[in-house]
Image (cartoon, rainbow, N blue to C red; front, side, top):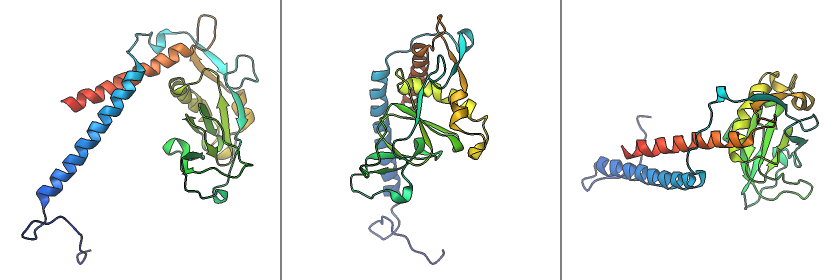
Length: 230
């Protein structure tokens, strides 16, 4: 280590140019901040304004079956259309399709891939994916391929905000199953129930769920903008 050399910006008298290094990093940080502000403002323009709603402890809650196979169930559930082993993925240049696995990281995305063999069909976006044996639950906005043992959950009311409300509720129940497949089965998933806000006629209150998440996101984004401006 002591004998190593590293390349650095140098002054005219061949000393490390620390002032340049500092200014360069500050400029990168400022650029990142400006990009973040631009992104957040674009998100806020789509989120609208905070609408006051009742707190969670003041609303009606009801247990709903996860599977639509049961009366009042929330989701149509089926296995992935692809289920490609990682070692069978064809390497292509146009790598813009998410490859979803049972990883805990990056919204379940292990990598991005190109179009695969015709026998592997992509699953459409705006769904929730579940890796039962690893108890991973994520929202997928775009079409994707998957690895093995991924279940796909469809709901006609689903969108990004409702999914962000539903996922913690699903994970809370799934975490009661044994990790690694000893008890984490599709049958048990379908028989599960989750507690959700309910309307006066005991239907899932999707409007409340969506606005609840919108309010949280609006507050967080504005908190960030206020922090940056101070």
